[in-house]
Length: 601
Image 1 (cartoon, rainbow, N blue to C red):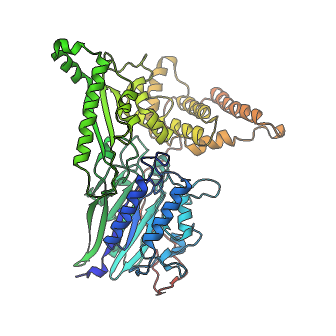
Image 2 (tube, rainbow, N blue to C red):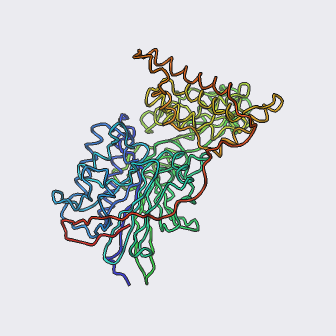
Image 3 (tube, rainbow, N blue to C red):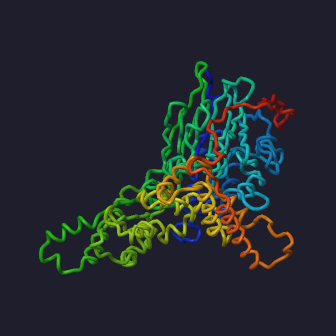
């Protein structure tokens, strides 16, 4: 029987989004306040370390005051004289090779760490720029967190675990920082993601993976199926998904926990679920590895309530009122109807308020109002005016949505109502453009999806246009896909052209899509077709890039392949990565707390 001193005790959390709504006077401190609660829970539970699953920050370059508060809290709760009870057996130069100080922080003789924090990066705080750095690198260099799971070779991903030992308990901790889902999906299919395993006591290790990717299937390749992950894993901590599904779920191969985000960054049903963090205890009982997760509710989270109401119900109520229902316009009735529902939700938030004095008083309220073409609606500002000092989000309480089947599509090209719902001012301010594009195509009818153009490529182009000011990105993506479609179609009889085009989407689904890197390389750094041209100004460069694409189109038209169908020759193979490696570490490492044996991979 293993003693309690041998068991690993880990607090797991993810998607803290520190600095979310940093410019909102009412909500700016929500994420910081809950982060402090999480640190307090870790201290009270006497955990060995904290494990974070990415998106610690809401932005790659957070405001200065957010950085300051984060550093203050980490220093307050993570530095001290309490000894760390576990040791690292793996080659730390391999685990932390991308860091300025490639070793775990609690072994640094210049630091006094009592509560180690291990974190990967997410899609909000991912490394960028020529130096490939993020705010997480800054925290790691300061010695306050241990940053791992940063992939530096995106053509061949090797996940080398942090090997930890506490008494007789062995833990292999794998980390995979965020990689664009389409790219990582392709790497998995090509067998280019390898999870290395210890050569010694191979079956004795408890294997824990933390990653930050789409878990839910949004499209053909913009998520990571659980089946892609290796079977030897015991537990997966899944970051990026914000809904709290923290109870461990067994998928037939390993357990998965999804802690979710402790702060609501969007007003959707998944964010309204109660927020928790988990404390995972890993033990060895009668020679068998086991774990137990205890979920702990967070009591400083701002209350959030969401409700869907229908103006079709109001229509029936007005009809039952007879003459009294004719005293007001339908829009006035609708406003009164919504006010009553918001009042009910505010009353509910007061009744269910936690005992923690740090919990914000003003709730988040979202009222989804379903209506039809025949219904007259009111301006959301009329509702906001009545709740300015009673809810935290008065300007975006109400969201009008059309009932399915009542949408006027304006000729069948675009679901205008759905587009307006997805791209509402709140979403535009808080979401990435490519996420809005994806959300639109996920929720509209199949008949409104694109055929020749792919959703994913347009998402990448929109992101380049917005985030990198790449003005030719959209036009470039269109041209690249046009070339691709013409090449794929080949010589097609005119009578079969429509049928062939309708099959393009199916054929494209089995091929790698155009990536952001390909678009950027072609648009921002086009091939040098005119070496003798010499230096030119920016305007000439812009024109030449588009001309390059036109040249490609001309080439395709003139040199079409003779085949009429079939996949391109560079289709990717399938296959899940196996855990093996021919390399082993050559040097030994010594901690300031004593010499120890290092385990090879």
